[in-house]
Length: 319
Image (cartoon, rainbow, N blue to C red; front, side, top):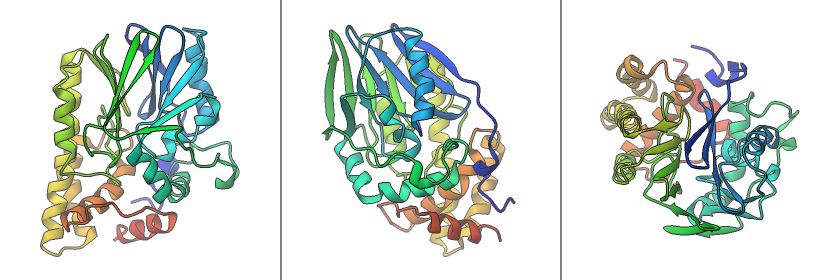
């Protein structure tokens, strides 16, 4: 096993795709890197997810400008993770929206998450000499608890908290006139779920609430755009399978008093045959095991990840 996180060695450029998944609705994807959504309204544009840095955000803006010259008026952040939010300054959007819970998580753990993710994902944060050069924490200008509707002229976008999953504050963005949804990291496609701040027991139920929309397309958090009910349902099924296949073997070990290393081995035996070729699988696995172990022991609120905790956990898993 490598002595560094798997993502530390992932420095190859990813191929960008910009796919129209509904009328004037686009998904910016990059082979398992964080996705961004674009919703074009009558007079302005809403962006879903900011990217990790302004430099990466400008790649999104270039694609937006290839299809519209309308101003970017809204930036929606589905949760608080640094790789999703620290590019916000590039958009200059007057309205930045998060759930109230996600904002509280920025207060509680945003600075620690920023330092931790900077160490984990050097490629996404390349171009900066130190963590101090990354933009400071991203704060919303508007928040909501369960549901909020934004009108881009006549085009309506429903922002909803459907339940805990990838984090406690996850939201989705639904465009009813095209029956399209941006799910953030609640749904992934041929990419591992990062569960280090997740809620394993709640996640499958949240996926089923998404399924109940009978969507025509989804832009997931990572992986290709999903167009058509067959792809949508396949992604929902595989995401649920990933979450359950991760949690169950780890919980069995934790509940009999086994070690974190034993839980890691049990999780690999369950997940490797099905998911080892997924994007960021090796990176996510140690964090997923650690969180599943805690949740099995009734630690409901995920413990805050810091650069120091990352290193301590990784050392335990070296055997």
